[in-house]
Length: 261
Image (cartoon, rainbow, N blue to C red; front, side):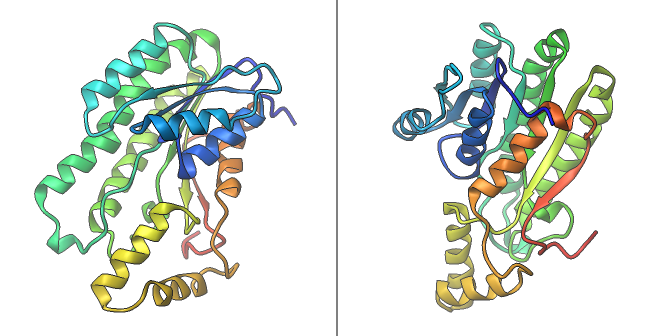
């Protein structure tokens, strides 16, 4: 099985921590040179310093806030003016939790810009190089809510579904060029995002975070939360040559929790 990404460059959004960083670690382990995008320079520097360099990889980072699509566009253009990006991992922090009936209209617009518009701008910038090089992987880190909406995540459910539809449309358009577009759907992974959801749910219900944590864990067939490294491995596989005939899919990495097929 061909898994090596030696000689390839990957841009990983939200790559300084959580599932983005976990994905970058696995991509680097396969030989990719990774460019991490995130807001905080201190965490970016720390993350880059932890990536594998045993195959001569050269890692870098750019400071960018996905609340500002024009800045995201400027950043990715600066990158693609210098080199071909073979792998793009789209990932940014999810919208705040809460019931959909209580959500302000602006929350939907902000989330749409951060997740759909930024994904579009990033993809548009890297696709020409992917076509020219004969290798391309575009991977979105989204949510199992694209298969079944999750409680108390009204805005997130809406926007994640939009991203999934965007990705499927792009997968069909890019398939003739050998460029794959796939989504990886994290279940409950041990990240800061999960802990923030525990907190918001506990506050809304008037219970402790431990109560929420135990309830969520009991809903998972494997009876545990996922390790970010397990998620990163799925992203790295889809980025590899071995996944060349897989495109347009939504892959749950959730310990079996998603009830749909």
